[in-house]
Length: 406
Image (cartoon, rainbow, N blue to C red; front, side):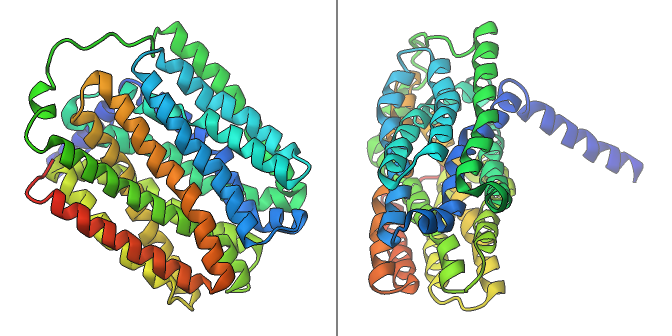
């Protein structure tokens, strides 16, 4: 019995020593910091709405401003990531984003707040297309899913912890104070991150890959079709789920008649699921293949969003938040691992930029539409439409990926 326990403990220790090697610990913290300013907005929406006198469409516009700019910025950032020092883009995604997070708390009116959120999104767009390949370069190919899943924990932890902190800060400092207070330590870490990367010569300008190690996979029959289908499905899961989650704080306050703090807590509950979902999803993709894992979460997420339109009980809402959050956070590292494993060194940042553009910018287009459906009809109609749309996209993509595993 002692030998079994000792062997198990040894395997666990070996696992963590492998996946936490290289840049993973540094970037788990960086990922956490990167997402803190962006996750202040959703739990603060009821307070912002009351302070500035906004309607549902204008609230959707706030989410749209940040997410759309964040997504669009990934396109040039992804292209630049294969041609300039990635650490510059990573620093902009932490330090630059934090600076505009501070300015968001100082914005005196709706128009200026939208403008600052747009610029905050532009700064944030450089992080992911550069950070994920940098992590992958220091990780064995068969362990990339796990490493990227652990990297995802940083962002997930931010999405879980930040709404809870914001809920407390709003009571004492209002939503403006929440933006300022939480963005300052992010800015300081951004400075530290740049100095450390430069000192270690990490994230220097990439050297062109002439080994040809990816030629067979990239030029294999159906490569482009599979890449488009996989990226489209991973994007759809995140766009439809995140757009739905953006309105959860308002669902809690307006339909369930809960407090703003309760709305922030339920939004955080969906993010809490990602603390385990990211690493487990990455691990499963290494074991059974990325395509089966993505198909599973895609087919589950649509019906789960639809069930939100039928929910009338607090306990059911809590279960659905955990389930929907799990689907979204499994999709993230699996999408990154698929792109990095099936593209050349020169092109992977560009493809990741397209993926992040669509997955992060998509909610910026969908959120105002969902806000309009809620304004005109109800939360139920908006969530039912989102669930049906995601399920349809997944079915189409599954036909294009049929017969493939990784």
